Image 1 (cartoon, one colour):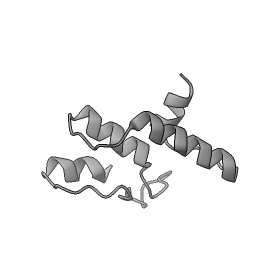
Image 2 (spheres, helix red, strand yellow):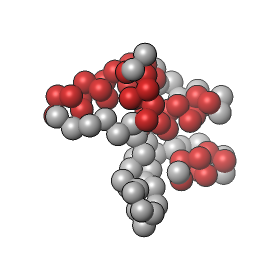
Image 3 (cartoon, one colour):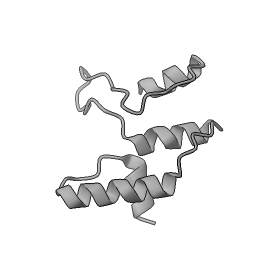
Image 4 (tube, helix red, strand yellow):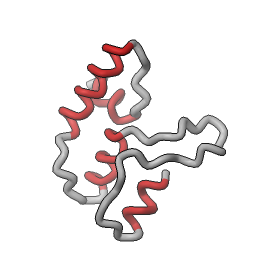
Length: 80
């Protein structure tokens, strides 16, 4: 995931639409916002985003549009 590389390079802004390597087999091309916020929280970086509320919103959106939630963190938090 490129998000971690940008954080490691001490970037002050991390785009929440950072793409994966789309040439890798099985890659979807995008990183879920919930997964990026979880990464930042784990690194001790305060994003100012409430992860639980974000995950709840992501679950609501995916259910509303009838698509599976592709966020690993969002799915894990919903299972609690």
